[in-house]
Length: 304
Image (cartoon, rainbow, N blue to C red):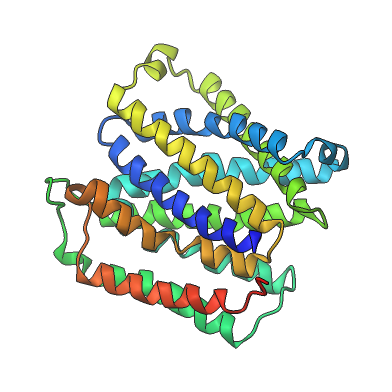
């Protein structure tokens, strides 16, 4: 039951993260959003370590696990997050979601063919619907060039950034699972802390060698800072719940449910960013298909 709860609420928090990000990049650049959001994950995971009493699990960390968690953190929280945020900048949160969803195919490839997780007819039906929903959302995009607020959407760049993000987001769960081994969810929280800490250190390294002026980094529009802070908190919470879920359930269950965030993106987008997003009947139809797919996957779980 805990794994199911974490996977579902991870999807909700992840959608809130992208909704806040969409508003934030109206005031400041994407690279500044990365600088603000990535470090927030470190103290949040430290709090989780204290709350769940995970300190003993530090002694169980092998060098191989540290390496895998670190690589997963850099791939997901630096490169994947940057690519994903650029996709949102180009298309909006609701439109970028379906493209990023394709990372699910990569996750499931690793799950079924490398980790040898079991697959059955319900997996195939549920995953197919979950993927069909986002693809349906993309139908007719040629008619939606501008948002109501006048923001021009760039589908070519959005597709490019979204596919690059999908590759990163699809690979990181596999690395987390490899690093986890036979450890429990407390061990996974430790892994999440290592991932975020590695991503933050890598980000500092990039800033140092790039020659970016610190004054330029610190000069962030107050509205942008507010929304980026919300983005960082929501994103880190989503990842904490996702790491716990991956420590309890197979990738083939966690990742499809996590990808249902596309549904909540539209809901939150309508509430917060309706003038800056494309939300119409084709988007809502795609949501319905995704929800059916998620429900079929949930039916398989023994949540007693």
